[in-house]
Every structure is written in structure tokens, then in C-alpha cells.
Amino acid sequence: MPEWFLYIVSILSKSWVLMLSPAIFIFFVFKDRLAFRFVLLTAAFFLFGNLTASSLRAFDDIYIYRYLVWAITDIIWMALIAYWGIKDKVYLWQCVIGQLVVIGAPILQLFRLVDRHLWDLAYSTVIYQTLMPFINIATVVVCYLPLIILFTKQGSVKSKIENSPPSI
Image 1 (spheres, rainbow, N blue to C red):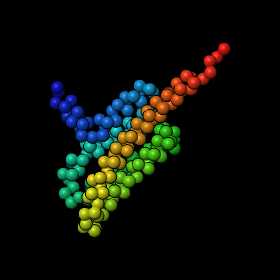
Image 2 (cartoon, rainbow, N blue to C red):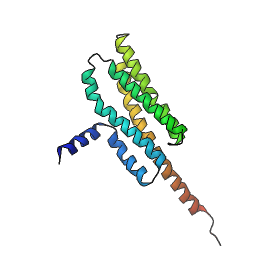
Image 3 (tube, helix red, strand yellow):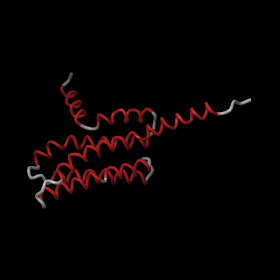
Image 4 (cartoon, rainbow, N blue to C red):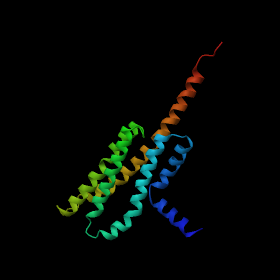
């Protein structure tokens, strides 16, 4: 395999983009533009975070800038999703659920920053290491919600057809 391909696969395997790849493909095939935009933007931000994390950690030896950059990145994602939700570019319900899920991330980032530098305590370590993966998992689940709703609607339509009285 080419080296560039292995590099791309290693990046994808380390990030949530690999988990979102099937959703990107499925929403593209089903031509669900609203869900496709949501999942594509989310995957782009996960990929950006993965690509910049190691260089940001190498640059930030005092543990300040990484939390600020990650909080700002989450806030920018939330702003873009909110804007697209208002402009009917993504599902409004998915936008609202995404906002509710991700709002914890910048709060945790800033709490971690304050906890490490102003208070010089370690309260945030366990909270941060526990909740951030759950926030990321919940964000991936929000990306798949239109697919779950699509399958639920198809199942309910089939059951209505099967349960309808025979026509004469």
C-alpha cells in the first residue's frame, strides 16, 4: 500500500471520522442533504481536531492554549450548526440535540483550564477524561439519528400497509 494511504487510514482510525464514514456514505446515497451536511461538518471538525492535536500539544507545554483552541473549535462548530439550522440547511431538531450534547465540551475545556492553572487542583482530571469521550460518542449518535428515524418510519409504513383492511 502507498505510504500516503496508510497515513490517511491511521488518521481515520484514531479519530471519530472512521465512525462517521458510513453515515456520510449512506446520507449521500439516500440524498438526505440535511443529514449529510450535519455529518460532514461534524466529521470535518473531528478530522481537524485529530490533525491539529499532536502539534498543538507539542506547542503548548504550559497546558493553556490547547484548551482554549479546543473550546473555540467546539463553539465554532456549534455556531455553524446553529446557523445552518436557522437557514434550514440541517434538520432543526438535529441541530438542537447537537447543541445540547456539545455544549458540555467547551465548558469542560474551560473548567479544565481554570482547574489546572488558577486553582492548581486536579478535580477536572477524572471528570474531563470521563465526560469528553461520552460527549464525542453522543455527537456521533446524533449524526446517526436521521438514519434511525428513516428506518423507524419505513417500518411503521410497512406495518400500516400490512394492517390495513383488504381493498375490494
